[in-house]
Picture (cartoon, helix red, strand yellow):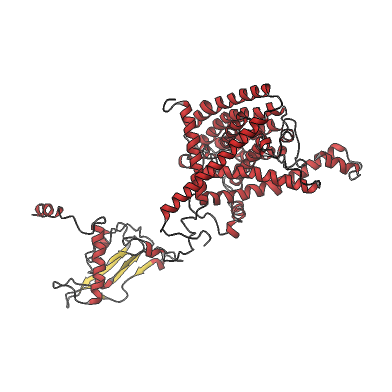
Length: 194
Length: 399
């Protein structure tokens, strides 16, 4: 009986089908791995998702620098920011920071250039609503002054937590596989820059 | 059926009515009862069961919201399809387009005429019963080809032509696998074939001799192909042809195609049960005619519905074959094998005209051994899965 011969084909079909049927039958006796959607599992599904899961967008206005990088990065212009420099205090003042989640396509391009990680995706995915207007998220209700990076480092403990989280978010995006950039690449980059 | 009407006539129920009219009316009433009370419900429940079984074999839940365990899902789907708009494409041949689903349904409903639900419960025990089934189920292909052509759509046309090629090809091994049974029994009547089998497995024709054992598998494979079921569902291959010949159909017409598809599964099961698995034969447990009829009906139903479940199970297991593979499986493997079977059975009948008891028991033992080994394999896969999944999150199936 030669390989790929006539009888070999018949034998292969019988044996593989036989065992395949056994595999699927054993699956019939197992518990399903999924549950019907509105049902819940013992822990929140959101908590099982990875840190960089691209759910509904959120902005930590406390650490937003008002640089407009996200607004420029957005390919479908769903982010609208009004930020202008106050003449007296020489500070950026945020008057409006709206994200239209109805338009957002969850590409994550806005969170990539953010210097502080203020704009980021949350693991929340249940965004259904009854009207389009309510899908526009307003993060600034009254004008606030934008965050300014301090040369001495941040001291305010409330902001420190947010900044830690933000930098971790941005760093993980830069190198999703390894936590720290590979050491071998650093000299090469410096040479190219110099 | 006829005896029952005769007894009514002799009791003077239909005085003054010609006997033939009574027969015709009785047959029409019985056919309506079979169609409305049995066929529609069976194919409806089959849609729900198929989705459920299929889902569980893939590790999903399946529909479980409408009624207990989603049991009423088929009613919800049916009502939804009835309320859909009935669209006929502007470029379609509208007359043929409208006619096609009825021809498909006609082809599959007519087959129920000769399905022997019990020793008394059969619409008409034709003396060409089994040939009648193969003939009328071939009518389905006319409807499918008509639907494919009339839709005026490339996908539909390719689907229709594929169905025609496939059904015409697989008629041959299916027909050649019926013939060994006809050689053994010397009759084509469904009741006649069942009457020559017994209730015990060693008296079923599947275990009669090695050739019928093989014919059984060949027939099941060809029947799946004729019913356009996975792994031979090329006419409606969704990854290539959207939905094949049903692409342009909506609402009730769409429903009729699927009614025929799932109803056809039951016919496949019923024919297999009749030919190979002893039909409605039950051990002599009772003399009560009504109770006996009920038991026979249940036996036949369970046996034939088991093969509907197997078809679902095959659908969950095997991937779809390519067109060239489909044709080579039929012409290079099934046709020669079934022809060899036919010759082998003929030689067997010549050698042992009264049947060979030793071969019967030996084949029954082979069947039992195969089943035993099968469940061993199932237990092996379950054990292996348990080792692999240990410590992983497990969800309750009913939550």
